Image (cartoon, rainbow, N blue to C red; front, side, top):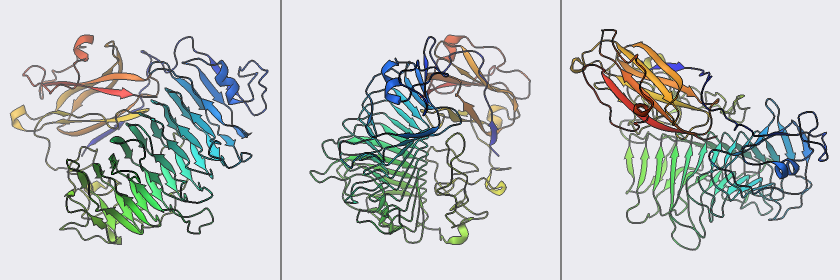
Length: 539
């Protein structure tokens, strides 16, 4: 059984999340832009606070209802080491109400053309166009919602690249013609490297996600652990005249363009037309551990792709007809393949209750039972290892990994060699999982091992000890919480000592040795195993 150690790492040394000398500014609904911007003398508007801030500063916006009729423009450029921080005040939720705006393509609520911003905790409502339009790069938008805007809730374009959209919701967005407003859109002239994690998109008039291109080609987008449902309907529940697809992975109207789209652990259900839609994308598409249910068509990826491109579909699930995949698809252990036969009894529940429910305090998705695998389903431990975390002897099929006692590797095969895996997700904010394996084979001596797993900053300073104990052979998993650390590169190092002797990696490694990252693990008689890997914290 994998050892789950969900540790709260309390960091008392090393870098902190805000730079020394940075200023904290405050905005409150009852404030005044003639004030000083302190906690006791808050500004009234975000633009005022932005005008006086410099890279590294934090702007806290107190909870309340803010009525606005002009766009908020964020054009300043920070750096990886010194971001601009625009945050809801802890424990509070500001509503940015743009309903006084006229419907117009120029009336976007938030225009983020700058780079290295971290925006967290806002509800953006009823803009005259997009709730947020991002044309900058290396930004993080976290735990925000975008609703009832007159175009896509959050759109990326004009070369926007390497942005992270984390734990955000986008819903009830509808344009006057009903054919443009998506939940999230990395489309048209967007750049590469944009990443969505833990987001929900529902009941938008057009699509949930739209990767349609015009003016650019060969861009990459990754969507992970995201839910997409009821798109192609209006807030009233009536069908819209929009496309009504869930994850639209590409397409164009000017050329056969390639959008390299990767979807991991994604869930599409009750979308009016298609759940997972190629839309004439000619580029490579990868779907790993995705689930589809009750869409007009669950999977529709059968059109041609360009020479050298690959369609990969593995560990995916459909309840009901799966739809159509091209004969060129590289498939493995999908629910519509032999020997699987899928019906409602494979799932704990097919009740959608809770899918629109409130998020957890940290912004993560709510706990639900809908489409989780039921105890005894033959979809459990039946998948192919595609590099995603899993419990048990093998991955489950679909987007939800089960954790039933009989689905976990109790008494099953133990690893035959040492292994330290790349953390997941990576980049991460603020938490990530680190998995490693201790072999039980006699080739490595068998028995328990003295294990030490340590995290270092780039100067080789120890910032966290995640394991320092005797551990049994098997798969192990540790959660690392980097909420007290600054953005940047960190190194985690695993040392496993000789078996059953009590000897092992108790001595502190030198800073230089701790930074030998991403190297093959080394085994020797005195130290057993030593390996380090790099990881990236992005806030």
